[in-house]
Length: 313
Image 1 (cartoon, rainbow, N blue to C red):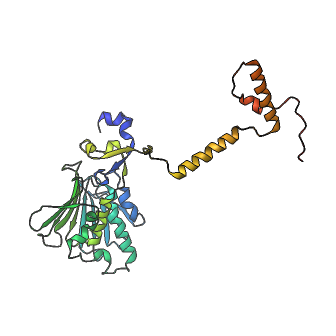
Image 2 (image 1 turned 120 degrees about the vertical axis):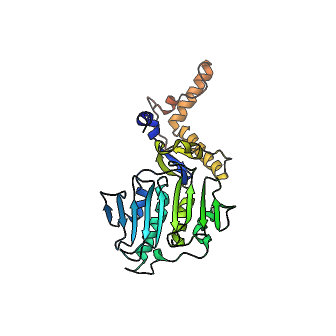
Image 3 (image 1 turned 135 degrees about the vertical axis):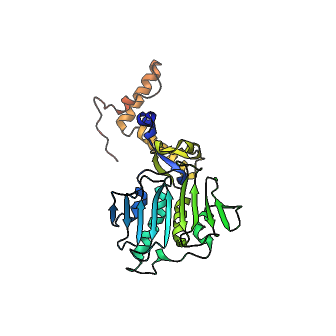
């Protein structure tokens, strides 16, 4: 970290970042682990993987490689010792809120499955229709691009994110679907890569999180300088701009009632106050001096010798 970053409080200000897929990592991965916080956690001292969160039967594994370019590795297998049926890998810059889309779906699938169910939904075969995996993106307005034969590409409306589906590859471990965001580079490109047998609904859950328009919170220092011109940063807690508009009939009625209440509050309420006002008015007219406006204190000041109250007839 540079000396400027270490001593400039502005850089540590919390900001809302949009679009979310360009927000980068928050350095903790908490959002990605939150949906499976109740699963067993295994902290590892040796090797590149620092933390593994597993389903109770250890068929689903979520690995956190804190110091590696491939920060997340998520797999699912038929049992605790079998080779993974599918693998999802997320690069260092991928926002953990996107990983949360996948881990939320996995937690739901596991909760709905029977113990050791080989037909659990997180082990389902992918749909034969590639469009099923990216439906949330097309629904969000992502458009198809020209691509090589055997591949399909879509890009976001701002052209800063996309998806590549490669139907030419074969083999259970072939990397067939790639979601990306941001320009190429260590600190700028987010990537999520899925192997061939990943269930389509899990890819779709990840894509839905990526298409989410809600901003996410980051520190300014966590935004790569090359990304600053591509994102919108709003200080956390700042007031939303007020949009002027013509008053509605309800607004007019509310204003009239408010003004009537204020007039009633300023008007005299007792006979004594009325006599004070009349006396001051005659005095002012006879002397021709002073202001014609009422003295607020005179209205509220009690008489020294108030007359006895009159009885109503």
